[in-house]
Image (cartoon, rainbow, N blue to C red; front, side):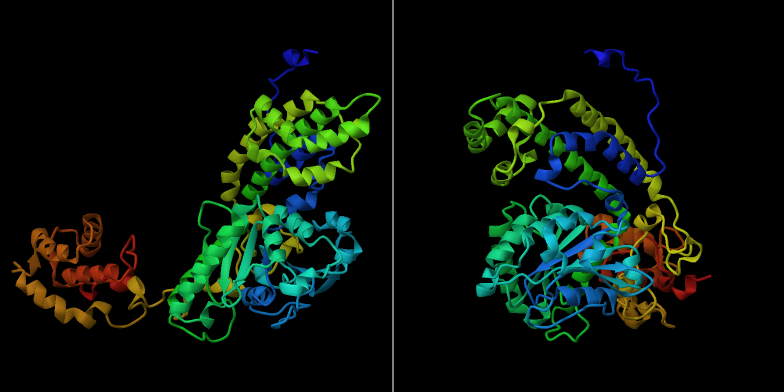
Length: 553
């Protein structure tokens, strides 16, 4: 009875080769027994298998038909994929997992769910009606070496949404939402209405708010004034559906390779695209942490579920009146929730949805539920307190593991198999991601602007407006060709920039560090002030192309 008093805790904690291997082991040995004992998989989420932990980060695209979901994938990959269909009508009628493979082709849903290397086996529960509408498109694209993308059928509106799809559409979305790393909700600038099916789909994504990114696509089809109205209308619509006090971040852009119809917002679209693509690029690096976070959420839900099921079993009569008592308990499940909250000090946010729980309980025999087993809960508590914290400490060590030099090219000696730690801690490259940090072509992001202006040109960029600065320099009464800090300050403060910013400009401009500015250094300081006033950032160190020719070695 008091075995915990004699248990030997001096045993050194287990060390895992990687965080992923650790997650697999603690799930199977410590959390899974609790899930099985209280039928967790029948109520919430299927059992996790190794492919769930080994899988690359996934992005789920959700939106009404003709909002540009499939075109977004094509734009990201900079190529088409097998099975692609694009049109103004509802063309994508199936779930398509776009994944990396050397051999391109299409794998049907029924074959996909029996592949032990892929994480889709639990989808068999949705039946043939769904599996006939599910496929994997294998594409040899560098973008997909780090991530996988799931395209979904366009969500219907009007009379069309009354037609039954033949499978649990929102249930499939829930399954994917639990396992993906990003959920991108796409809206069309001309189609902001949220249909009933779209509302149900968004509600199915609740509990995964940290994964959701909202994209207002086709924003080039309206002018500047209309875009402001469209943005306001979208925020109003989302506020009614998302029901969160925080304002959702919306990325505005036109994600396709055609000319912009209204290009007055070109800079805005470029900035938003950079932010979104950087977020998506970071997914491989943060995938391990996301899987760790999801396991913690699952463990907390499993604990609450165990308390609920054991409480229902405890209140059931042993012989007579079982059916009546079952109906009474299901109807009063909210009172059981409140009792567990008080007794176990658990937050209301950790409890499953009451209505969904009631619907599932109807089909179960309460007398077959288990009573509370404290030992199973102790193991999970210890897992959360000790094993998870050790794995958290291991993540920074994995972050510094260098990927092999052949990761971005061919697989070389890896025979097509990338160790999970290498894949997850590299950045996704290729396709549209190449433009995120393009420092070669003149069309790279912010190339030739701000601090980069004049890069690669034979003439010093400051010379183009040098005549303005030389007259100011002469008016400050230079001595031996230089002005003092006080004299320079009297002119620089006219910019109304904060003193810390002006101090940084002084340090960048005083190249010989003598406490004075000559005419070249003063012209450079005034140029940097202009760059800052135009809304650009200052560099930590002065780029070579901004060093005055007289100061270059």
